[in-house]
Structures are given as C-alpha cells and as structure tokens.
Image 1 (cartoon, rainbow, N blue to C red):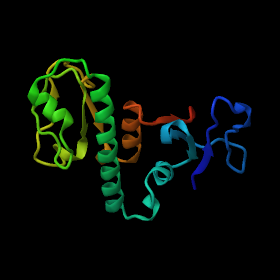
Image 2 (image 1 turned 90 degrees about the vertical axis):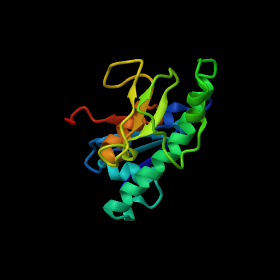
Image 3 (image 1 turned 180 degrees about the vertical axis):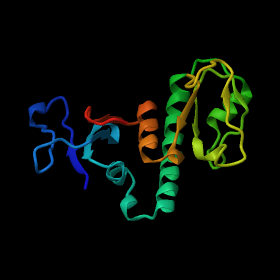
Image 4 (image 1 turned 45 degrees about the vertical axis):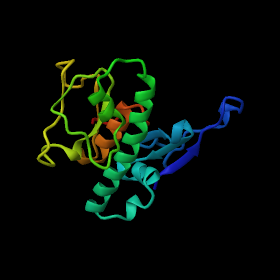
Length: 181
C-alpha cells in the first residue's frame, strides 16, 4: 500500500515533512515525487506508485494495467509535447515538422527519421515490436538517447515506464541505494 505525503510550500516549515518508514523502521524501496512536485509517494512496488498516479490501477488485470499505462502515457505525451513546443518556440522547423509537433495524438506520429531539433515525444507501444510501425530515429544525433526523441515506455513494464517519466522530467523517481536494478 503506497504511503502519500503532501509536500509543503516554501513558506511552510519543511521540517514538518518526515520520510515514512515501514513498521520495522526501514525505508521503502521507492520514492516518487509527482503531481507537479506536490506529492511524495512511498512504496516497495512499482504497482503501488502507479496506483497513486492512475486511479483504480491496482484492481485491474495485467492487460488492463498495460492499457491504463498507455492511456496515461498518451495523456502525458500531449501535455509534455505542448510544453516542449512552447519552450522551443523559436527553434526553426519546417511546416511538416510543425504539423507533426502540434498534431493531435489520436494517431501517433509516423516518421522514419526526426530531423527537427524540437524533441518529439513518442510512446513505445505504438511502434515496433508492438506494431508494424517503424521506430523513428534521430537525424541529428547518432546515440541511444537522442536529444530530439523523448520516449515514454509503458509497454516495457512498470519500472521502465516510471523511469521514462523520470527521464522526461514528469516525475522524480528515487530507488533505495540498497536495491540493484
């Protein structure tokens, strides 16, 4: 069962925040800072963390949990893409790139190569190996994690999805240093 601790504002006493522990006094495996920094969630399972972020998640079947993670990813994709578009407002882009960046996400972008410097937020389950759609590659960086392609990974499992949210700065995920992941 996840433990929720609400953060305090800068005008409140930060000393009031205590990190919860298990009944035996040891710390939980995970800490997730979410809800725009206003919530801290502690649990030993990734399911517990996702149960805070996705209402009803814990009562779902495995297949339903995957569908819920995908829907959560699309919701976050839309908001994150809008924020990136605004932040990179003065970055040059073609009309086609602008259409892709500002397009609705009821259908995911299908591009073989992304050459624009503005990051494109993509979701793993809409591309190979989950579908026949080709995985987009960066045309500006030949690296495993190019700066212009940001991936949300609900299909890779709960921990990888949380990690992808962390990498996209949507949450802060902390794992106990005693854990080998």
